Image (tube, rainbow, N blue to C red; front, top):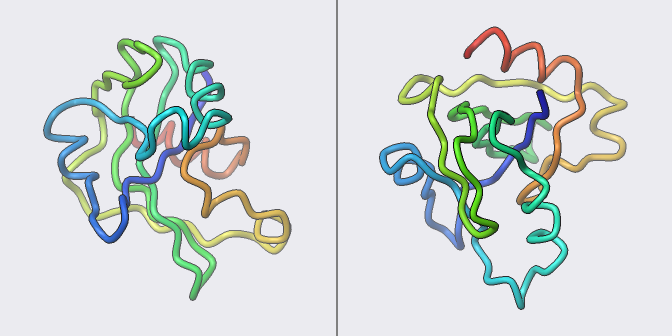
Length: 124
């Protein structure tokens, strides 16, 4: 299982509720604005898991807002079967090593943290 993370704040708008309600996620830019993110986005496969996250700079933590399994990828939008949704977000405080080379503020990335992968597995 690969695990991916995506942010859902577009400008000042949190679109995570829309993503969950409508069963999908997508990037907040068009491909011309973020070609590298789209290249990475195309690597997501059916059966992979994804979580919607936010990052808090003040306490160096992430909030896991929703967790789901990818059911399709048309290279612009992932259809997702949400397993953890509409609950209090899970807070995870980054370790010093995780925070040192921090990818967590990024919009989209593959998750490699063993601790976060464990949290996701426990909530699907």
